[in-house]
Image 1 (tube, rainbow, N blue to C red):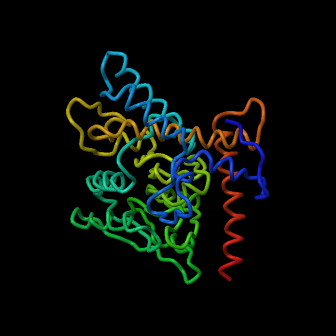
Image 2: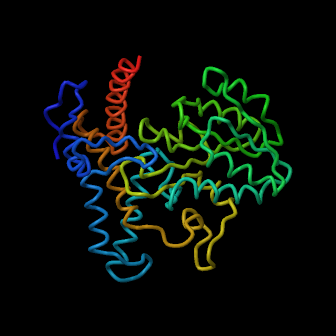
Image 3: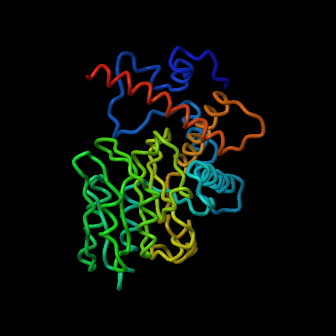
Length: 326
């Protein structure tokens, strides 16, 4: 599909984009403001889900054609999500139910590796999923340091420095506050944590739909995101450095390889929604490819351009909204 005829909205083709979302075409006067419910999905994502359920709704790992197709669709989705977040390898992408369940999974593994490093830094800016899950490790011997917001509603990295030491196991923080939208300088968080040998766990759920994710630039160790906030059906994914995931203790059945990403993906996840996540990334590529055309550009380049166009349009909308609210 070509995105043409941009409206007088900073060059963003609103009507063309809206036409790609069946829910918006049927909504009438209803306005989707329930942000916790996630984003609506474009037709291409719906088609990917339907195609899986109709054409190859079988288990992966078999030698017959439909099963091989499922293996390939999961591999394709790993590649797409790896490009979305600029991972080092698709093998670092783990699929599952949601971000919260992955925070819990990683925390249980961290709880088995506390030993001399028994301190975890949490913040009062985070969603409770990235606070309570870590606090539950108190029974495993964990101790906690609180990195608190200042009155301006921001986490200042200078306040983090005295909280870390050679006893710090991990710093858990959000990229963007779910309640007030403050953005954290997570690259500096990683610098500070790594300077004492600690790891960094980022909750990217609330940043992912609005900004470009780059785990290499941020230099973090773990990151969770909700695909359904990013135009996919309900699912979530975990990224971790390959060697970090390899060391992490996880529950798995005996027949599951003790290698990322498989060791992290307990049980059967929802393959059709993973296919939808693949299509959601391709939707972002489509926007970038059409709104900022260029020859010989990579898939990642198109994602960067697509997310940039969305970000620019959101800033325009935010200015309009703030003008009304004031």
